[in-house]
Length: 501
Image (tube, rainbow, N blue to C red):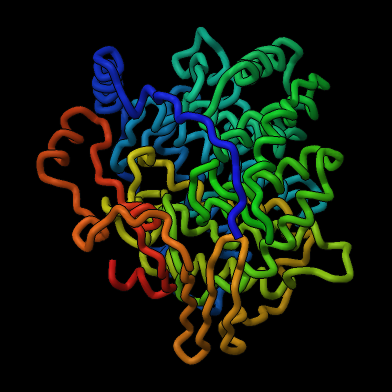
């Protein structure tokens, strides 16, 4: 089934087409990074990997220790009042400072969700975190420092002025989400002047333009958070209507009028929609709940105990594949008929984390830029050293909602491919899904080509050339090949594909 979506011309994105001044800025920020960054923090890597190889450990303990691992490394890398964090890794096509902003914006939702986890577990709110090496971190103070430093124009860590098509629009959504989740510990303790300072920075998103795809959800997240915290209602209903125009049925969204059907549905669309519903339950609950339940009812078949059938971009977000199941479990908690059980949601989270982290997917305090170890072939040019923290989106939902959904105490239930063979179609995206119990393999086959303008040579995964590798190191700007296999015309994806990478 093909749904016609009206398209708009793609704008010229400054970071994709840098002029002379942009290139000078990139080099200047790379020099700042060189003199500011700290040594790679690897002291907990081996112990974390061993923890996730231990099948006897509960998933709650593993998630709690993973959070402590992340927090300890963040404390090490953070600079300028926790407003930025310089992680080691390959740069994006943004500036190094924007990469370091991701080091804060994509980490602090985990810390905020941990506070919720603690408040749900203990009668008295536990605000101090003991790191894996015995250090004590006061999480509310870290979060508060990040917001006050990042939104202060006079502070070294100021997050800066937002502009149309700016990566900071994307990051503002995660920052706003962290502020909302931690409101009892942070927002409610701010003075009126501090609240105004924070609010003024977020209000910058309102008049700005974004790329015409899942990015419309970022300003919406900010606007709903501000409405919840301040009463200011600047929610752009037109942006939300545009998001719904991308909906093609059976829970699936196309990522823009000419975009792919890929895993962004899991860690982009439905993750963001889940939080819009949590922030404002009256926003569009019927559609959000129905589309998520519909999506999960077939998506749950994609997951295996050893990997997933990756298709699309941003493979480095692979640890977030269970996010929709966890979200559906929460929103369906009071319904008689649900798309996923607590036991299956728990197993989807546990197996995805154990498979990847147990095989080395966390290094230097962050998810690696690859599937297991580093792999430049799988790192998009918009991804920087901390971009992979979107992999923690499943962890964020688990920590935030786990106690009320029964996630942690449920008895694990097998994934569909562990129960029986299956084969079915998803007409909305023109795909077949095949599962084989004996081999534990799931294959997704698209029945139409995204493009036919490819050859056997151009369909392969390309390796970064020596010239571009040197140029990337010299300038601090990503110069990697584009390896989105969907756009290369590949139509068949197996959960065992990672073994060939």
